[in-house]
Image (tube, rainbow, N blue to C red; front, side, top):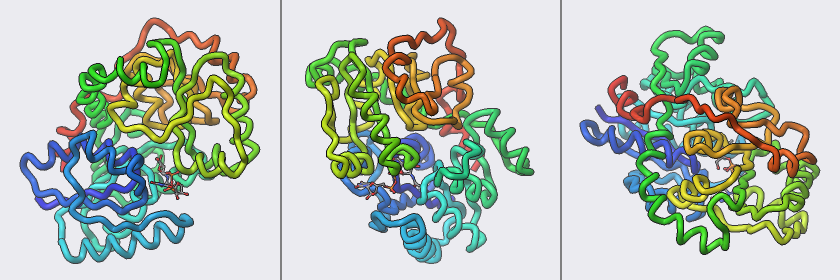
Length: 349
Ligand code: UD1
C-alpha cells in the first residue's frame, strides 16, 4: 500500500516513530509534516532522537489562529493527496494537523485511519476535543488505545472498524528505555539533582496557558514547592511567562523543551511529575512515577482510577501539599496494551 502519514506536533512525531518503523517494512510511506511545530526543540530533535525518517513533504504552515492554521494545512494537504493518490491516510491524536488531515482526506474519499481514536475529555472548550470528535466521525479505521475509547465511540454510534490495539506510545517508550538509562546519570548531574530527589513539570494546554490568572496560579504554586523542579518550558508558556514578567523561585529550574529520550530519563528518575500533557500521564504510569495532572478532567481515566494519577482541578493553591502527600498504591495494573500496538495498526490497515 501507499500510505500518507500526517504529523505536525510534538506528540505525533513520537507516535509516528513507532508506526513508521513497522509500516516501512512492507509498505510505501510518505511522511507529511505540516510544520505546526517548527522550532528545533519542538520538532527536529524528535526526528534525530527517535531515528524517525525525515519528512518527505514539509508544508511549513507554522503558527496562527485555529482557523488560519487549520485552513492553511487543509489546502496544502489536499494538494499533496491529489498528487500522490495514496491508498490510505494515517492521522494521529488530536491536534490541528490531525483535523486538517482528516478533513482533506475524507473529502477526497480516500480511506482515513486514526491512531488514538475514541479519547474524550467531554470538555468542548478544549480545541483538542473538537479535533478528536470530528476526526473520529470521519475515520474509516479507528485504532483505539483502550477499552474506554472503544466505549466512547460506541456511545456516539461508531462501531464499525473500531479496534482496540493498545497505545503506540508504549512501543516507543520500550524502545527508548535502555537509551534513557544510559543517559540518565549525566542528565541528572547537568541539572544538579539526584534520582528521586526532584520533580518534573510541564504546562502547555491552552486552558492553563492562555488565561493569565490561571497560569499565574500554577507558577506561583511551583514557586512554593519545597523541592527542585525541572521545568522544560513549551514555547506557548514561555511567551506568556515573558509577558507576565515571571520570576522563577530558587527551586525552579527552567529549561528549553527536551528531546524524547532525555525526557524519558528525567521522568523515570523523578519523585513525582506535575503536568497537563496527555503523553506524560501515561509515561509516568508506565514508569511507576506518581503524577499530578493540572487539569479538571483527563482522557486517560484509567491512570486516575488506578490511583497513580491525581487530578489537581481547581485546587492549584494546594499543589505543594498534594506533591508532598502523593502516595500511589503498590499495585499498578497493565494499561494500554502490551507495547506491540504499532504492528497491530499496520496489520489492520
Ligand atoms: C499542540 C496541540 C496539542 C498538543 C501540543 C503538543 C492543537 C490544537 N494543539 O498544542 O494537542 O498536545 O501541540 O505540544 O493542535 N510555537 C513555537 N514553536 C514551535 C511550536 C509552537 O513558538 O515549534 C508557538 C506557536 O507560535 C504558538 C504556540 O507555541 O503561539 C502554540 O502552538 P500550537 O501549534 O498552537 O499548539 P500547542 O500549544 O503546541
